[in-house]
Image (tube, rainbow over all chains, first blue to last red; front, side):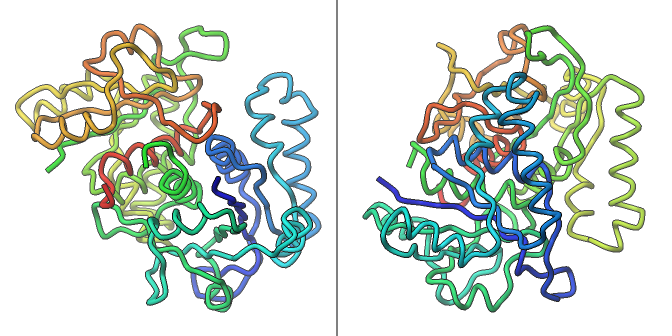
Length: 186
Length: 186
């Protein structure tokens, strides 16, 4: 069985000019990526944001759909948003996974650019099939910082479309990547 | 070359109770699906909504990113949103495609449910490779009506995840389906 965790990072990421920033949470990132994670059988989806007000916002959205009016209105949405765990940092996520798996996860960064060290989707499918826990990391805003990417254990190759346009939303990228890694058609 | 058009339908779709409704436009549907369409080399993305105020809203969003402040701020977003064409009905979309292609497109409905007549992704890839224009249709809200689906030329098989959860957002479903049909890895 593939042993995969997913995290959406709001810090450290870069803005349009390349400055390192903490980004604001986008409501539909939470809904779309948790629904995708649920579709592909993942047990958790970590939302990483160190800012107190942003973490409170995420908690409020989750609560609406898991224990509030939304849970009654749309149970399918509840079962997706229940996967979300809020965390201050990628280090905290790694510690939490270690407490479950008794080993630290390998960190796999995603990026729209190709690196000399990028691994292919096929290779990554083979790697996660062996059961070692891996944490697949998506960046918000203009993406993960170079420092973060250079420290990751692997960088996944970019999504190849038919065109030379490299500007998918993180919601779409996460959907395509999880389908390529875990979809039944592969 | 695959000859594929994509439409996002706001009428006729169903609500939670199965009633036929016209749904409201979601801003991120426009952004995400146009970016996905651009990634996979499509030339247009039809947004179908018969309501005047909703069409005006779509036009306002497109204008902001294609001629307004957004076009300067984010040219990559402009080149995606430029693909959007607003239409009153699927019949109007079919007529517009006929004016380009000199033949009506075949209509292919998407749905999270499997039908006896559903065609596989592999079969659909083969069909569009022969150059006949096809219009792939996504429903908003709780999806396309049964009447619409029964009148389509084909129904595409549902996305198979690893789990039994059938509740992707239309943004994520469009991303996965276009990747399965047009992605370079296939």
